[in-house]
Length: 306
Ligand SMILES: [Zn+2]
Image (cartoon, rainbow, N blue to C red; front, side):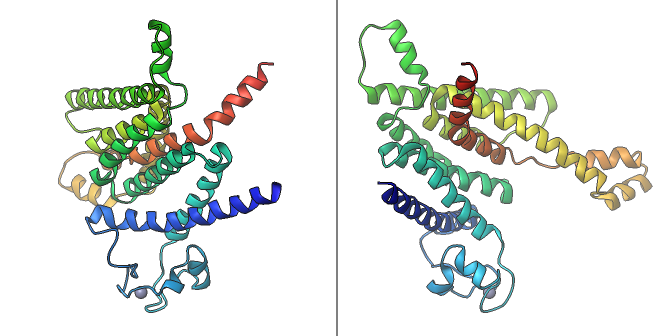
């Protein structure tokens, strides 16, 4: 029994590595609107097709010491890191849900979040090609596996005497999560634009949160948005301060001072503040925390009260 569990975990991990390798393809190709199927993997530097034996997740990168066999140019550590991360999350997901339909739902969710978080960090894009099909899949999955902490379930139980079929309740929860995220973020974005006169949030962020909402339902959507914006604010302020302290665009500011456009430090601060926070990345961290961290925190909290 115990041994078969270990064997399953190893298989889930290897499966995660292979999916992680595919996620790398999605991350590098989808923002450039390239096919994720063809052609096969190529060296990002010299464009030489990569031999299948040099394309084994993590292992090939280690054996080739992070360099292309053909041009010897370095290959980003992002590739093995994403593969490893996906493998670890897949194992955590299996430990939480076992072999079940729920496992399928949350593996799919995890893969989508990894692609969006890393893509936003690299390119500040959250492609519709990921968020919109993801939103549709989220609703389908919510009908099959209702979100945890279902608000629709509680409301129906409270206000109607009739029990509705579980798939309908799950779908209602997904729609509530997606609908709330869309209205709230879109409204906040409009308010910010009216107040500051510039965009504070892209529509990509709205569509990403609608997708997350479709998977996790209303209550966890709130947690993801709170956590994501909080982390984003802390990370953003830290990044702007680091850019300022590091003399970011000092030459641009000095030229502006010579043209009489203002004081040096004030101009440097204005330039640093134009750093664009990858909000999708922070929302992604929140979206994974709700799935992988919250259940453990809730267990600890309940245990702590006894
Ligand atoms: Zn190369």
